Length: 457
Image 1 (tube, rainbow, N blue to C red):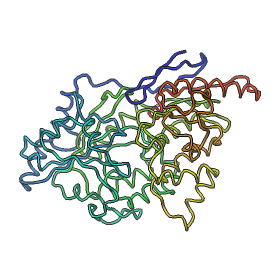
Image 2 (image 1 turned 90 degrees about the horizontal axis):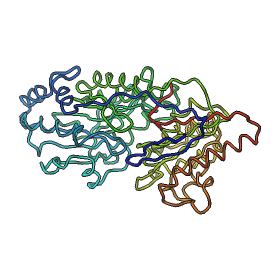
Image 3 (image 1 turned 90 degrees about the vertical axis):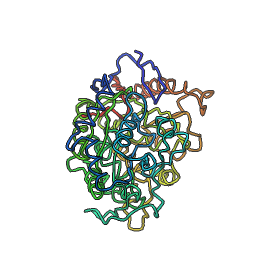
Image 4 (image 1 turned 60 degrees about the vertical axis):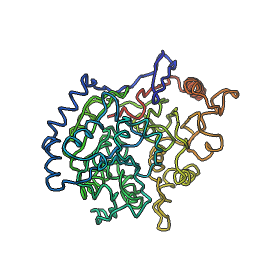
């Protein structure tokens, strides 16, 4: 039974056993006339006055006001150019309202992610941005001089937010609303927290106790401490306008949501909840999936591990393939530093380490903690991970089994896309054979076709 899947712009076909259960999200219809829909959103936003009037009213008070448009980095496939592009319509409206191009800054909400080079920005954005002379810059969570202290959140987070954004007279957020394995869904308030905060401000938002909550999971906002923290921090500075989108698996826009930071985001959340949910109460012996567009490194692929958890029982195997195209296919040095603590301990012991009084918080430990949730259900030797870009020595620090072990010897540790479907096919066959030897007669296999995007409910 052949099926296909996409990792970014690359499309792969694999041959699955005939009795595999394919689990796929419902999805949503793409917006057929995106230009018209974008204009409608600007003229009829959710919870605010129309965009042009909103800007005009701000300029009456601050005629020479600065405008900051916050964008996501390249781990989120937000349409910033082309017919679905949401950036240039905002810029054109700002200029038409009287904001000079040199007074507009496009600010990338990197959070603690790696800053993007100019070449990547030029791939992501319409070239008109650069031709107009609009500044495009990264937020730097380590640049303390460019952070402004705004007090403390209800849970004690030191609120330090990008000064350029805080001081701007016109504050606009853009982004993608999709399921998020910590904060329920992405987008909205997350453009500020963690997108524009200082590294120290992530210590509670991404802290061990917040992430330990059963409510810190996909498609959950009520009682979710990560969502509540993000909203609390973001509300300290607010936004004049947001423009978020929802997408299908082919990155077509299924909805445009503009207006108030909370109300427009809530509308997008409802859309996501309806379209990505997968109704399934079963568990399977083998669950096979991929890391999707977001899995540009092992750090981001944790979202796939979390999405698969509801389908697993204690004797299940999970198999994940990824295309880790980032400059470091594993992740930042801080992430690499924490991974061995999980690799060499049980999940519970790892959490105990993070809770010790003498443990110094390490940025990116939160993502390792999310991997650890997977190993509360299955052991590491029941998890197989493969990405052709990861070096042999790097697999030594990654939790689970090195997927190269399942490939023929002459295909191991090769930087070849062709190894991705081969890995999935031979691994399914090998684990199935192993389980039958152990006495399991009926092997239940599931293919989670949407990777981290389809959420079991």
